[in-house]
Length: 542
Picture 1 (tube, rainbow, N blue to C red):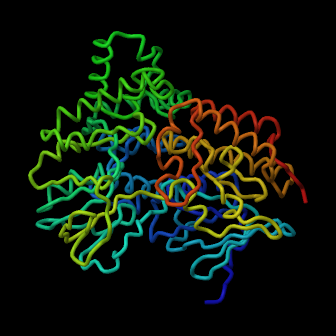
Picture 2 (cartoon, rainbow, N blue to C red):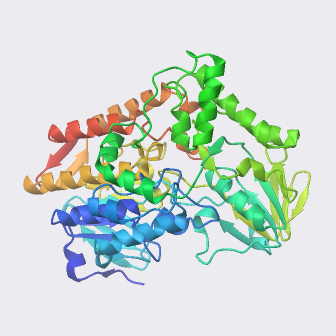
């Protein structure tokens, strides 16, 4: 199909936004309130981003719903009622659709429009964005709202194409859902998605085989309905809670920062605190038990062993319990999962845990799956194998600069950014929660709002000053990358072989991608950069 240019208002755009999840919707709203003409392009057939695609059984957020929501509109905060402490996927998707309708954003969003390339012309200072349908959009600025966990990774197991049953990926789940009743199911992967879906599938399936390569830490969600009293009390002080959240590392209020080391207290006191956190539920609450759990290996081990002992006490078969004990990383250095009866599931007679670290998967067969020593007959396979995190969706688009670099070439050895907002050599391209920003180590909505506000203010500044071109300085980028690494190296995070470093993607460069000093500190850095006429960026009028 030949390229065709889109006429009308889309031909006179100030900015193109790629993605219509939380980030894309807020970027669209914010830019339009500043009088900028913006168009959102979304690959999915509807809006919602990760919450459109991730419809797997048990999918829900691990940040409390009263926090995992937009803070920019008091009306939105007051009128929306969350049914549960930790919102289910369907409720979050309903919320996103409500926001789009309430703010009248849909006319400026093109769904079913997958972006395949974006090229910047230095002569005209314009981006040309091309879709899979051959449509072409042009604008001076391009804003990537593609998400951190949005490019699913389906393992390249030999024989998958020969499988005669049905197979699914957690990030590409059918809208109509899946009925596993009376069927033999294999779930491959025990990260966050697997831990959420396994208890639900176990209730339906005739037999469930869980194929685990790496045991993961998980703590109870202790999910519950939000009562009218809790809802009213929180909404009466919503602004207070939002302001408090801005002063925290994770962008989440309601958790006073700990002041003591885990090693400063007696073992009995430590056990009591962990027990209280376990009973309260929530991963942030648990990691906030003491102030050094992510920087001191000995302190971390006290929390790690507490959770291991919980697993031993829950899982009746000692051999199964032993396989479920995480031993290759400190707790919290991978995403600390939340669950609803995950470990209890392995007490069910229809559930079998298969250790594929000691007995690797060899191939998918027409009738199931084969490891080195066994064959498993399966009717369905559910891949809970995660995503090409943080960089995958960006590199899935062929981004380039005329006479300059391609993003894929520049990032061949790992992502390099200044503040996680821009990358040197590629002008007028902003990334919302890009690598090198706090992003996945925070409440994502809080990080999204902070980035979008900064980008929108920057575009306003450029317009007021009649500046057409902004690019991160290479020296500023080098300093920022070094700082991100130094901060990470002062913690326990690099000790885990996690998707934070791309370890789940064969051949992906091992680079620690999030900025883990905290959203509160990062916010101050970004504000100072802007206040100093965008220090570290090159600005040109022509």
